Length: 444
Image (cartoon, rainbow, N blue to C red; front, side, top):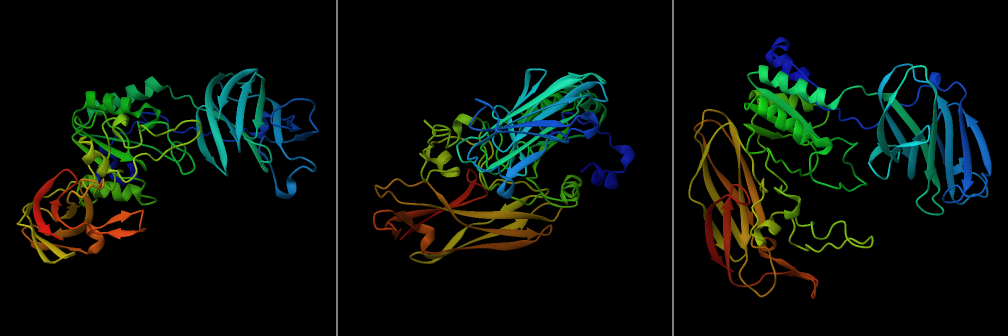
C-alpha cells in the first residue's frame, strides 16, 4: 500500500510509521547460536513420566516424526528438546514455541511461551505460541521445549523453536504514529489481522481487533481527526472508534494486488462499490452466537438456528454497527418508485436509479421478502435478490430483480421440503438490511 500510494502521490509527500508490530511468529534459531546441537528425548506417553525410550542429537530444533519416520513400537510420542543458545545481539527478543500439539518453551527454567495460552496458526500444521524476553549478546541461555500430544495415537509430532530480535517498544510505536499523524493533512491507518491472528481451523476468542489495535486508531484520531482507517481482515470486528473516523474502507484480504486496489479507492481512481456480506455488531454480546459459543463441556450448540446474520438483528430489534448490504460511493443516487409485476410467486421487481453526482459509481438495489404470519417462526425478512448498477453522472438505468417460488418459501423439516405459506407478503426494497426505500405488498 505504501509503495502504491507513493507512486500516485509522490513518495516525498508520504510519511510512514509502523505503529504496532503484528508479527507473532519468529525466525528459526540460527545454527551459529547452537554449535553444540539440540538434544531430543522421546517418550512413549502423554507427558514425561519414566525414562525416554530414545535420545537423539541433531543440529537444529525443527524436527518431525510422521509416516516412515515414526518410531517403532510407539503409539504416543512426547518430545522434550533442550539446547544452549548464545544470541549475537542484545535486546528484546520474540521467542516462539511451535508444535503440532501442546508446546511449552522455557528459558533458564522460566516459562516464556505456551501455544495453548496465546496460540496462532504457524503453518505446516504447527500451532505456535509466543512471548518476549530481554537477551544479552554473548550470554548462554538454556532452552527447553516440551511437546505433548493431545491424545493417544496422534501419529504426527512436529516441533520447532523460533527466536528473533523484536526491539520495537509498543509505546514508542504508538507515539511515533501519533506524532506523524499530527503533522499530516490526512492520516491513513491500516489495521486488521493476518494468518497469525485468524485462520481456518481455529476459532477467535474475541471479535476485537487483535493486538489492541483499537488503541493505535484512537491515538491517531486524537492527533488528527482527518483520518481514514483501512481494515485488512477476514471477519467481523468491533470498531469502538467508528463514529470518529472520517472514512473507513473494509478491504478484506485483497491478495497480491492489495496495494494497487486499495490505493485506487483511496485516491478516487475507483469507486468503493462493494456491499457488506455480513452484519457487524457494536458489542460481542449482540451477536447471534454469543449465548452459545464456546458452549458447555466441549459441546457447542448452534442455538440461533435460522436466525443468523441480519435475521437475528431484525428479530431482536438490535441495531448493528454496520448492517448487511451497506456500502458507500463517491457519488450519489436517486431511486424512483419501485414496482412489482407478475403473478403468484413469479414476480419481477424494477426500480429506476439515477446517478445524481459528478462521478461514475455503482449502486446495489436489494429486495427482501417479509412473510405473512403463519404460526411458524420465521425471520422478519430475508434477502431474495439484488441488482447492481454502474452508472455515469446523470445516467439513469433500471434495476431488475427476479423473484421465484424459493424467494417466498421456508424449509419444513417435517415433510423435508420447501413450503410457501399463503397470505400477504411484503417486498422491502432497500439499500441495506436497515435502509428500506420502499415497501410493496402482494398476495400469494
